[in-house]
Image (tube, rainbow over all chains, first blue to last red; front, side, top):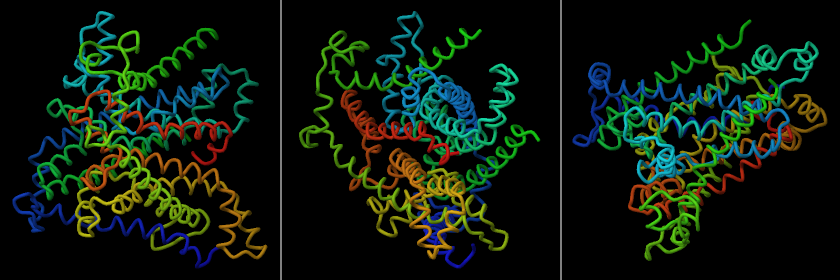
Length: 288
Length: 282
């Protein structure tokens, strides 16, 4: 079944997407070679000056990039472990199964920035409930948002709350689509639940797991909304991620040219590292 | 051993449930507080810890001139942008996904998988990378700070999701279905429209829900590309956060903004339990 009509199906979507995106991408590359800022808002040509500055004289960008890697990898690992555990539990018959499934899904339906507004009051250091409840247990007030180390973990907590449901959903949908035969065979062999998981469930779930982890890594690398509202990158630059740094350079300091350089470099790094991660994960999790 | 496992299992899911519900309970409680009960000491339970008032909720329906928070207009703006962009993305995405699932494309080294990857890879693009060129792009077209401009941008955000889910779904719909329709004398468009599409309702619903979720929760593009004329809900609520808005009306407006999509959780669960979702989402 192959004929000319196939283009009629494909092209509208493809061309709309390309049409909307082609300008921004070419523009970003061109902009990154210019010195567009608030003093000279024009598309002049300064060659690779911006790139030299980025690679030789901007530790803040690289720090923000490593911070982003740390935050996204940690949150995705936590989400995967918790999401998989939750999915395994409500996969089988338990009491109030459907109730728990709904509850576990709810956070991903809520707008991250708006929930973060609530989290900010929740973690408020003197008027929030967390420190108050901990205080009743005799714990000293914790500086959730103003300590450089703890603030990172606050961001992680909020991100895990927000996005574990997505991982949970993908993994549960995967579990529900697994064939029944391998489990029957394992049951006949009298395998313990633990062995069943290691030798049957986990290998069967490997491709789905990889897909889910990659999708979440892609989304987690864009982490910005939470940081923006929760800490505004602070205290200092303790929770500043790459996106946030580019935002400051581009839309607060109006160094458009340099921000485009950062954007383009960041995009290239992202695509390369995600491809490598996908390859490595496939190798690690699917043995054959 | 069995008992211990069961105990751990229930402890875990109950703790997790408490963790999920906690911010909502806190927000609900806060939305009924007044100045005294927010700022003196931390209070939790209405009537017991503090005297509840409806002030936080009343502000939402007052006009801005009388000290209210105008949340109705952003609500409809968000609804309009999300639904329009989702609809366009689903239509175009479904057509493209059908083509990618049924026909073979060859152009130089580009194959079907590469085209699919091109669609999906748009999600890798961090919003910030696109926002600066979009800002200039839309201002040249005079679409900055307008609903149409946001719809255009949101299509880029949502079409990859539609293509991702629908390609997977169509791959699972047996090819024999279209072939039979073609033999019966349908042309390819009729085969798609009359036979394949009606069999793809679950996939379309899942794709639609995902588009609506990811459209509704987006903040960054709306934040960069609109100012005063058009405001979307998340931007409005965050603006309240940075102004001197008291916690009670902040909580009330936050709750009312996240409420509509929570219904989606019930729909998703229904599909999950009926087994339709596992086919559509993998």
